[in-house]
Length: 466
Image (cartoon, rainbow, N blue to C red):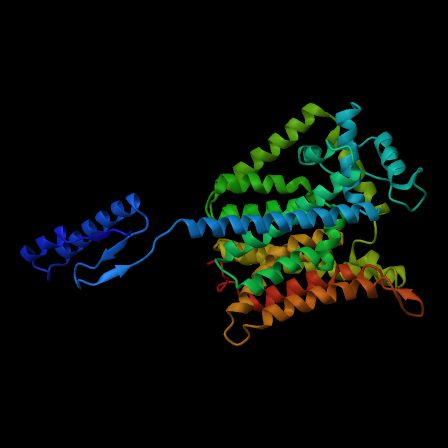
């Protein structure tokens, strides 16, 4: 039986108090609130009578319902992750994809179980070829290069301890999917926006099953992890936790070709705004990461650069020039590539200049344009790198939702692009004109959409993070 708590003792004093005085009334009410709060702690399921109106205020206060909701939510999350893991396991059993994961997983595993010291060695590359092709790689086939900074090893190590490639790959895919989901949630936090359930579902679908994001997961490229560190660095910059932001910026360099322009932009912005801790923290963190790597493998830097310069010659077309070379004469393709690079350079100069001495919103806008321009700049890129555009797609969608005239356009764009992304993949793998295959043109639509969207919609001052 619920107790009746009548908070009247304090209010009896009100007869001696002039209620017109705000300070006395405020003090009295605060004392009453404290009294009620202490009572609720003793008995969370009570009925309180309003001492002013003499009417009962019946309010069941129970901690059991929220607890049940939390447990239900946790169970649903675990079921979803279990389903993802099962799908990943089945997919890993049925396909031979995941070359990006294999070329990092096997070298680290050989280091752990075989005592191999140098993951960049030709012997390790040969072992990768044997596992991937069952023989040495033929001319034109990927030679199996580690091609990452040595300090990526700790991130691969937990999965390299698993000897079964299928299980290790499935877990790595789940890890990358969690990275994608976290990027979406962090991006919404940065925007200070709480989406509807339908919009959140579409954003998560975009991060998991759109062609650009799913291919990155299937291949097992660490770009997803680097993208997470980029978003974390922006998140902590916004929170003015500059030391942690610098650390996240340093960790993002596990994929240098993806983060080099972003790194320079953040340093320029931090310098102009006198956010020195971002610069010092990132510099010290990079120095520690490289220094520890030199302790374990003194020649790692030279070996890494050797493979980086070899990689573009054996990789799939990854710049506008190499992409257009598949359908146009080499000279024309080269000039097109130079044109893209020049336009990209001019746009970079513009957005970097606009970010100088500006607030965080302009930095985040500039970061989106910078990373979206990467495939057009001439720096070698792959479609697995497009995962870095997830936060900026999210921010564009938030701006559309906040537009008074087009609130439903965001969902339509998300759903439409998820479908179109796979149409792009199909079209670029099918002979269309005179037997010509417009291969790898599907690398360009998403960054082009993000660049145009940011340039058109952003006039930065209305960025949702402000």
